[in-house]
Image (cartoon, rainbow, N blue to C red; front, side):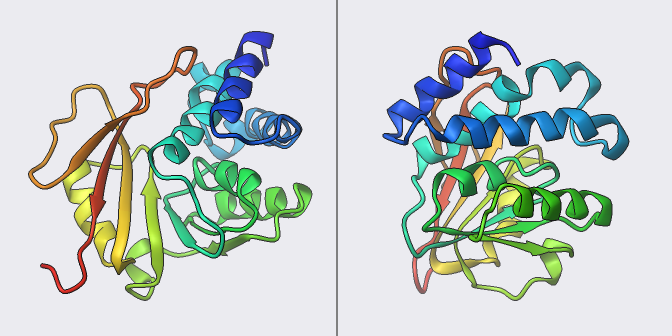
Length: 205
């Protein structure tokens, strides 16, 4: 990982008022992702040299859109290598993060990372999001899912009646009706920095 990538992550940590000591945890996770990328299909081959700037830093952008709070329950749907859920769990130990990953080999990687990084605020759900009980989470997040509007609609059932859904989207994604777009793009982050947010209203449709 280059010094430039480390500097990018350090800048975002400062913006979030988080300690720079977290860099060691985030770097350890990024290195583990790079080492197992091919074997487990965690990230594309072209991304293996830029895990910090393309995936770790991009995961931290979720906290710029909606910072995790102590006592909250978050779900990361299709967690894969742990982006964004495991990254956020490293930074916000007072928040519980459930990593939803149906592929057992990737889930095993996440379990190893949870143990190796000493994360007591991480739970694993080795199942499809559709099989989870509804209405459990304060915030539901996802990266790299299918069509954003359909993804957000599917994620709604997991959130509490007043919960929030956050989805990172590509540069050409259209903003669906009733969805707020948040621009969290930052220099050095290899990401469009676009997050769609849906905040549910108790008793709403």
